[in-house]
Image (cartoon, rainbow, N blue to C red):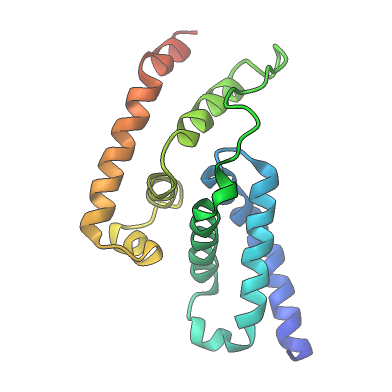
Length: 170
């Protein structure tokens, strides 16, 4: 890779790393270590194709697509299902108040969704992507995205249930 291309890639990576990390955290339901690994893998794959970036069109969208596909590939691995505990560790009282407790509640609910449903929720509602864009990223039909979206939101509502009402009351 030429110096100018490498410099452009470094600028791109620096500019997009935070956004990719936030999306990866949502995809992994708050597992920041796995999120860092996914971002690193995504940027590594982007580096390989960066010399052909003129063919990419929109590198930021392509990076987001790579991130989701890396996440889904990780979920298909046998070892990805290993969890040391399925309970959220206790947090201090100050961290358990306000937005932090809501964030933990939402991350726990996201964690319980299947990987593809979680990816649909993150892409559609966090990334604010259209049904067509989400379908392209996941290599599925638009109907499948709509079905997964409806099912995932229903599951989230069922999991959160009265929790959100109780949280809003406080």
